[in-house]
Image (tube, rainbow, N blue to C red; front, side, top):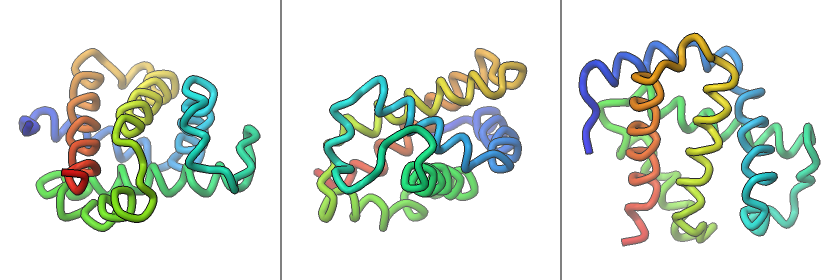
Length: 142
């Protein structure tokens, strides 16, 4: 699946706004993930998963930073996320379905935080972009 020029432009321009709130967005996305899909907590037995915890904030920052790397390297997402893909497949052994769940929670967070920017076109572009990111993160599982 490839992104059109218009979709790439939407992702990159919206990323400029997201990046200024990346920590908060990452934390909120993870809080939403753990609340909506409690089974995902099993990958974080050593974390304090209470809303607003320092560990949740730190990991949320990492998650959104990875999405940012993908946005900055939108023409070569595979190379940008290769090491992260290996980590999740070989070391952490994260069930690939969790990337889709996380993507959904990020979409909801973006829609809530940027209602004016999150048009139907932006939603479709971000959904497609996050599907590409998820696909890249799971390609080492094959």
